[in-house]
Image (cartoon, rainbow, N blue to C red; front, side, top):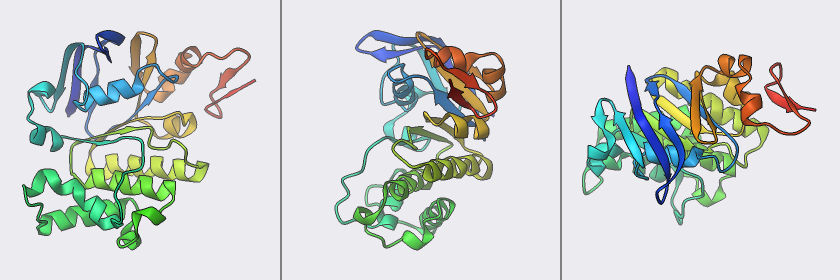
Length: 252
């Protein structure tokens, strides 16, 4: 089922386009990785898909509805977002922060009912956080906190989850762990997960689809096609290095 569809989409800032003519259809149950060099427009695309930035041209449809026509609450029930940075959450514990993901569903007073508690429990279980419920957020490592922020987004129970560099600044073990968790989310919740990353190996091993951003344009296809057609070599062209398909990395 198509969850996100873009038509002749142009993204950018202050009227200056970064990428034009984006026509993609993303489906439920897909893990989609957004690849490209720094500053190419990956974060801008994610924020535009989330409704945080307006498109310069074209349209975005979420589950058949025009994104810019959705009220804020309706959008929050369709799309959850994880952006970089540590939240300023004071002395909050893990479960309290994860439960904030239920705000689009709990009304003005934020009272959690049985269905809300069940959603929080499931999100924490999927991110292996059940034993962290009463941990103070300030005591968490970067990898642990990233899992908490993803759990909060999962508790929101949206068909679309967008993540901007969720594995940035994490060690190899935590990067792989996060990617495996997100892959599981697509399978168990049939959610569409779109994330930007520089972790090529995990991305190519686990992704269903690659969105490769190059100057002014975007290519969409499977990781296998991206490798076979030399798309990665062209997008990440570095003097003296070549892309090695066997290791999904660049080598001299």
